[in-house]
Length: 233
Image (cartoon, rainbow, N blue to C red):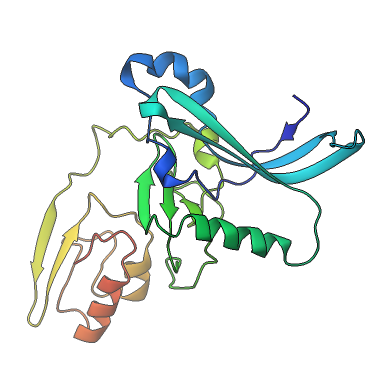
């Protein structure tokens, strides 16, 4: 195969309708020979073009589970040199192809969240992030381009298996004079947004963690709404 690939970014996934989230149980061991490549990769291709001349192209390489988890399918999207606006045109074509799918999100086995059809995306500070028809969002916590995935899960050996020593998935109730705050430490992603924004209410290193009468109601409501994991309600 005349190609070279570089796993530099993982920011898109297969069309949601074409894949499942993991290998079939009875074949999982053998399929992981290729299953380790599941995800989306930046591609740099070097080879012979249709005219028989040396050529290079950049693009994307997508691997995903298909046929009920009994096979791995790869899709190559190689973008040849083109004029201004070519990339935008191709993204618009992909968006049109996926228009009927509607918004969706799936968790890949030991990999990122694959998102399809989102109209807008913001980071934990509420700043807008450029969206495309398909996105892969960081799930391992190691990405350097959060909220997008950069493939770090493959290097760190991230696993989706539940840690037996994890914080219990339990909702605690904190009643104040004007507002009651619900908090689930088991789903918190520890972004630090609440503690940085409203430290008198969300007290890092103290128990109880939440002091619902420690701030103005409008500030508390804003901090709860901005919680990226949904641990606060």
